[in-house]
Image (cartoon, rainbow, N blue to C red):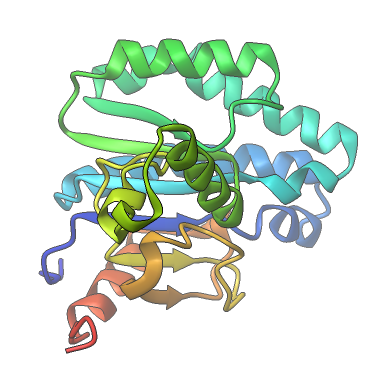
Amino acid sequence: MPSPAPLTHLGIILDGNRTWARARGLPTLEGHRRGYDRLKEFGDWCVARGIPVVTAFAFSTENWNRAPDEVAYLMELLELALSREVGEFDKRGVRLKVIGRREGLPEAVIRAADAAEERTKNNTKITLQLAINYGGRPEIVDAAKRAIASGVRPDDLTEERFASFLYAPETPDPDLIIRTAGHKRISGFLLWGAAYSEFHFTPTLWPDFSEKDLDAALEDYAQRTRKFGK
């Protein structure tokens, strides 16, 4: 197993579920189900490699434009992960967090997210953040609204102060962001925090993503020299 440079936060854009299903003549929804199963395994791989925080891009603000039956199924999967399987996450020492806009989500998903966060808040093996109804630009807009509502004066608003109004201000910026399925863009994922992130793009579709793919990304990251503009 490679020994990557210190990595405190790994972001991953889960792409390729639908392509994976179509290539096998399966319903699109089956691709999402396989992708969800892969995410559970991925969390275990990250625990084994000592990665303390993982953020997975599970559902973007733009994904509402997909077919209604696909959106409904994705909401069911998210509720499943946050409610009926929360005991399994808890047993594995996973701290679950949901970032993104709660408003607009089904009430069942919101209740499940709140309950999962409360139940797992003291777990320390890994923090798994699910970005649901998330967009990088909406996050920045929401942070600006919170800053204004809090009464921060323009002259007092520094980058550090502004960051305190983001969805998860206690989370360190992502060191590495992986995107599967060959797309070389970030689609608004963690825009504020990704200012100095390293990126790894792989053609592997998310349901096929393996431990070897993770290790390849970590090895790639270990070869980088991070200067942060210096």
